[in-house]
View (cartoon, rainbow, N blue to C red):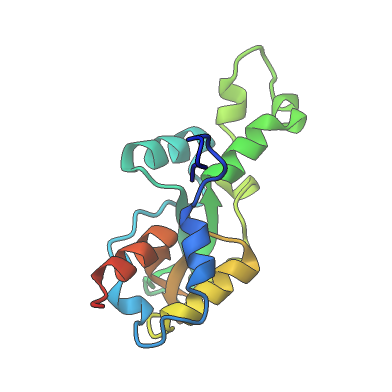
Length: 172
C-alpha cells in the first residue's frame, strides 16, 4: 500500500486475506482446495535435508509422517508433527544450535534431526471443514497452513495461498 506521495505505508499479506475471510466462506470446503499430493518427510530427516526440500519445492512447511505400528501388518503413515521454515530459522538463530558444534563445522548443526524442532502438537483440519471456519482457526492459532487428516492419516494440506486461490475462483 502506498500513500498519496507514493511512499510505502503497509503491506497486505496472505494472512490479512485469511483474517478477512474468517467465517465468510461458508459454502466452500477444504477438500475442494487442498493440495492432495503432499510433500512430507520422516522423523529422521536432518535439518539440512528438510531445508533443501522446502527450497526446491517452494514450501514453507512440511508435515512429518511415520508409520504407527499397532499390528505386524503395515499401516498408513500417521502425522507425527510439522516443521516450518520459521522453525528452522529460529533454531539456527539460537545459541543452543551452535552448542551442538563439536568441531568448527556447521554440519554438526545441520545434522540435527527435525524431530528436535518440529511442532508435535499439530493443529489439523478435515476435508469437510468449511473454508470460513478454517480461516477462523488459522487466525486464532496464528498459522499459515494445516495438514488435512482423517483418522490421523495425512490426506492433504491447505495453506493461505490455497485459500487465496479459492477466492479467485469464486464467481461474483
